[in-house]
Every structure is written in C-alpha cells, then in structure tokens.
Length: 263
Image (cartoon, rainbow, N blue to C red):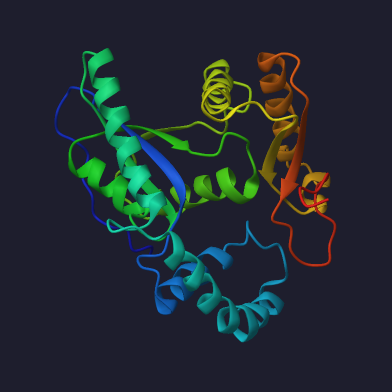
C-alpha cells in the first residue's frame, strides 16, 4: 500500500488562496559539502540531464561530484552575502513584496511564499505549510519567463510527485511561462532604459539567454522560440536600437542552440 503523508483538508467554508514563486534553488552555504549536496539533487533530475540512468550515475558520482563542488563552492563564496545566497535573499524579498501588493489589491487574504526546486525550502515543504494554514487553492508560478522542460517542466513534475503522496490535494493551477506577456516586456524595457539613463547607451544591446542542447529543442522544447519572441518584442519596444540575442553557458561536445554568446 502507498504510504501517504497525513494532511487534512481545511475545515473553513471560505476558500483561501496561496501563491508559490518557484525558483531553481541554491546551496545552504558556500561550503564544498553543501554545494555537493545541491549539485547531486540538481544533476540527478532526469529533466536536466537526458542520459541513460546508469551511465549518468557513474559520470555524476565518479567524476562531476568529485571535481565540481570545490570549484563551484569557490564561485559561490565570491558572491555570498552576510544574509546568505543572493538568490535566496531576493526570492524572500520578492515574495514579501508580492504578498503586500496582492493583499492591497484584493479583498481576500493571499499568502505568497518562495520555494526552490532543489534545496530549501522545497516545494513540498511550502505546500504542506500552506495546507496546514487552511489554504486550499494554490497558484504555482515558476520564475522562468520562457518555458523549458528542464526548468518549468521539472517544477511541475515535483509538484505532482509531492501531491501524489498527500491524502489531501489542494486545487492547484500552474503558470508555464510569460515570455510574451506585456507586463514582462514592459518591465524589461524599463530596466534597460534605466540602465541607459544611468550609464549611457551602448552601440549594441546584447540579450543573452541561458542555453540548451540543440537536440532538446529539436525534440519539441519551445524554449529557443520563446527566447526569440521575448527578444524581438523587447527590441520593438526600444525602437531603433541595434541589438542581438544569443545563448550562453554551453558545456560538453554536443551542439547547443545558437548563436553562442562567446562567438
């Protein structure tokens, strides 16, 4: 028999709402052991690395988790702040600010929490916290404007995995991207114009997105197309500015989506 975690449906007749802002995640500290633990969880996700499980297990545990944690820990140490990881600090602030904004606009109380796909607080912990507070309607917003199976899809997988082991399942809705939303494009436009106002306008605006293996997009992932759409919409908002969009962070011998930022 499946071992469900006991959680209970809210007793109130009044519907209560929650919003989860889901991000990638961060190690608990910039130590080698903490980074290794984070990388193991991240790189064990079948959505992130699409290789045969046994082959990848040997590569991950025999090579990557031996070499990479120390190097990555050093990089984290360069950006770590007194209050912790920058991603965690700004995720907390973002959730707090959105909760204040939403509760000033709507008559019903809305709880907004941040959660991490890898590391803490996990989406499972946040969902349990919300249902424990009587929340029975939850909107999940992965903080990735452009959809990819390795980010948004993985977040939805984890939500499903968590709820599959709970007796009470709240009503859950997902946002799977906002690459072409007017509000998002206008926010990008304001950011660029503010930078230009403070630092001057360069000859060319370079929009660099994280990359993906080409074979992933060839198999149907819409990420590349959505990045292109975002770039063109922003360029249209900015007018006659010379611009380019490209993709960064490629690793390994396989072709990644192009053009590459470093070329």
